[in-house]
Amino acid sequence: MSKISKKGFSVLHDPLQNKGTAFTEKERQTLGLEGLLPPRVDSLELQLGRVHAELDMLDSDLQRYLFLMDLQSRNQTLFFAILMSDPARFMPLVYTPTVGEACQKFDHIFRSTRGIYLPISAKGRLKDILKNWPQKDVRFIVVTDGERILGLGDLGVNGMGIPIGKLALYTAVAGVPPELTLPITLDVGTNNEEYRNDPLYLGLQQPRVRGKAYDDFIEEFVEAVQTLYPKCCLQWEDFANINAVPILAKYKDKICTYNDDIQGTAGIALAGIYGALRISGQKLVDQRFLFMGAGSAATGIAELISLAMVSEGLTIEEARARNTLFDVNGLITSSRKDLADFQKPFAQKIKPCSSFVDAINLVKPMGIVGVSTVPKLFNQQVIEAMSTINERPIIFPYSNPTSRSECTAEEAYKWSKGNAIFASGSPFEPVTLLGKTFIPGQGNNVYIFPAMGMAVLATQASRVTEEMFIVAAKAVADQVTQDELDSGLIYPPQSQILNASLRTATKIAEYIFEQGLARVKKPKDIEAHIHKMAYKPVYEK
Ligand code: NAD
Image (cartoon, rainbow, N blue to C red; front, top):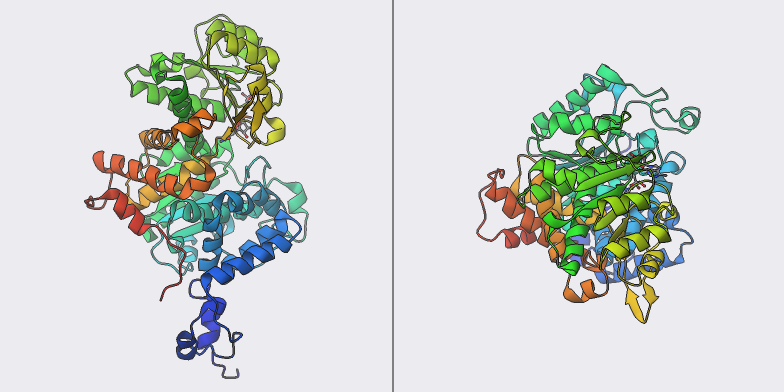
């Protein structure tokens, strides 16, 4: 092999060290970079301007996504500087909705690799494979098995875009240092036949492994992570419910772990409720909620609301009785014979009812939460029934995407004569009605999970508990200003998300210390400690 000098060249191709055109004259001389870069030295600000201009020239969000992913693999500082320059603009580019399309096409647009792939064919060797990751101190892993990617179903290893994108948000939104994070995809096969038959598909071309072999694989993975990275938090992402629920139940009291689809979702819904209560001036213990839908989202949200009600003095049975579910077959009542185990705690001793409007008149809820996946179920009659019972009805159509929302923001405001306290799963534009502009809130988990990650990191928490999500929800709601509440907004604006997340992380961290779950000594000033730890996208001198 011919002898080549790689010193400067390898620095330019290491995304953690690369500054591109921002290397100073002195750095260029010492690192052997002279001649490898055009002569002028740029500032980070100028580089940012160039990237913004390049993004504006592109025609589609998928192209912008690919451009940003290339940037991440070239120059990490510049990538995060861009994301953090305008999180509200860039979050939808590196995560939902653009990441969905990117995952679907992942194997057809594959570029440089990032993260670790653990195929089930490597069972018995997972620890050795994990050791190939260059960073030895990993504190935060987002892991998927690709079975339920967003609302898109089984995408197999193409789901890798999710852990990558989600970890980018942990950094951009709450300052989790990127060098401590690791995206992982577990490849146990795919039941997506189109992928299995596609010669470009990059994963194992076999059906999904189930049962004991799957459970053993997960167990080996968890043990390998615990051994190599004992301070690491494991966040499970986009597993199908059949695996997500038992995995969480098995590990949540043993290691530092959580599932954002289950717990983060419930957290953000509870934050919306705390925000709504600041508008209505009522107490959580006095509320009753009726859910359109009785699936995993409904039961997860209902359970966290119930636990929050318990913290205000109710028994868990009293609290669950204030959260009533309604599904495709009507009210979830104790007389029903078709209930799954996870629905039974919410079965009420009330008469069966198959019309949602009748259910509203029977239960008299202060709020309705739509998690049915079916559009238009919150029709005029429903909103009017809620408005007859309540001065300020809480109307939360959370089904995603926008096309599945149980109602639009405009419908909720119009049919309630401007009185609805509204938040949705997918974003809606502001609505002007009766001479007033209403700003609809979006119940986006991004207000919760990055802050949880930062709090866990700063405290080295030994566990992630349900109560930590209640604390997070309260902290998010408490940050909404009176002016924002007056315009109908019940979540902080996304443009302020970094500050909001650090504040939320501080509140969670305080709770972790109070509960004795921290594995580091309590700093004098927790907020200052978190701000100091938070990643800043600037070049090291
Ligand atoms: P799921 O399939 O587990 O549950 C759907 C439920 O809706 C089932 O109980 C079903 O019986 C019921 N349903 C279906 N058709 C109905 C009808 N016509 N009338 C009444 N009930 C009906 O789904 P899931 O995982 O619970 O998710 C539900 C929705 O919630 C999805 O659209 C998802 O996007 C949304 N969601 C939003 C967020 C968020 O915005 N943060 C988070 C999680 C889930």
